[in-house]
Length: 238
Image (cartoon, rainbow, N blue to C red):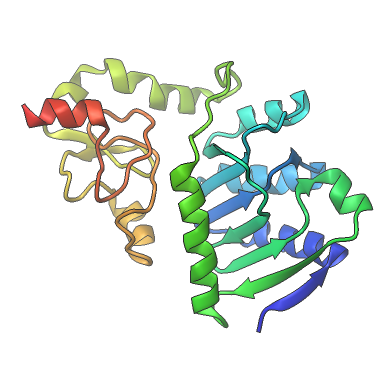
């Protein structure tokens, strides 16, 4: 049975959901003003290279402090959704649907209600929530901040930039894992490295959105079914 949550229960369970995220963490909220306590937890998850995605409303303005925080994250993908009003937070085992935005004022001042769904207890309900979040991701453009993420560490910077200039990646037998971006033998039928494939295999969703083009390694909303960007697809077709 889904568990009913009041304001404090939503906040407590949201923190627990973030802490227990091992594979994915999806945060869906029209408005963002992330509490410092949650930022610390999110940053730890980010450092462990899980699939971290945030969806917020397209016409929302994010303050400078939260913009800076998001730019410091190395593995986050941010999406903007037209007319978003839903609030949903989930990892690979738990989903929370609530009236509360990911907004510090809401956590501290508003009276909120929500429910928590455990995949182990109610797999059908959890899967319905997960599928709806995936639809939101499919219809929402991915955000690129106007300023480059200059505060990325050197490893992340070297990971993305050389992919366009490293001559060995021009060879046809070289590719990239569409989830983590690491080097991989080029094979569109097997575009995931072994570690990422074992994670993907638990759900085996060929339409699940990943992060990189298998051919050129640039950031791209790829899938196992369509692992290369359009430009590479055209080149490969020749």
